[in-house]
Image (cartoon, rainbow, N blue to C red; front, side):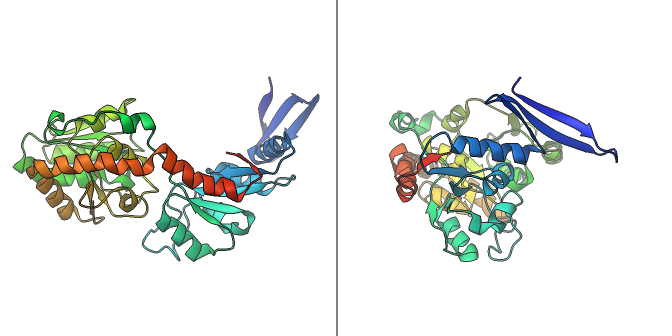
Length: 343
């Protein structure tokens, strides 16, 4: 046994949790909570070499306090891999995303910040200033094996198959996809909408009820979780992502890498950076279900255009190759030389 978690009751009957590290360097240590244990771990890790280390924090709720309270010197980098505000329409004044609030309210404690898109980098600098360097690095890349794989011929894809690959969650707005498919089904009776992803809370019940009320049970299919999402991208003719907010969207990047044309809302952040509008997909307006419906119908009616979008999607994905992504990381590494980076 190396670590123990102790649940105790104080005199008021309230639970108190302590952590014990046993027989570490011939000593045992007790910590009042996970934050103190995490801070101790970072300090110990930081002393394993004689170099200036850099810690990159992409889960600030778990790691920010420990980094802020280290007793040994180190460089600290904030990594924003999602929208940093609650209301993307009011970047300068909106309340902060709960996951990043503590980190951003302690802006001066960081030595650099990473955002996933140029637009987010610009917005972060506008609100918090340019007193620390800001780097733009995508949160994903397309591996060389995928880029070198033979493209799926468009006529081998399942005709009129539309997919949405995302958590079943309010912000992903599968309800808009279902609403759009009411009209799509009228004009394309054989068209199918597959919803892939696990559910958050009771949203799946709500979506099932919406499908039942529209009598689309044989058309809108809930496919759940898959360990082979690439097969989904390779089989479909069109993908949807009518989200009201995104951080970068690995789904869009994965879909483009597999030649899947996408229809996605032009929201902060990611869709406009990944999708080449009217070349590898189409950007739509959040909340405009009529526009979403019209776009799906026009694309399904024009199979030739869809095939062109598919070919361009394969080309578009090359912008996010391993080499291209590492060049952006290299700028961060060069900034901290001769520091050693620990992520």
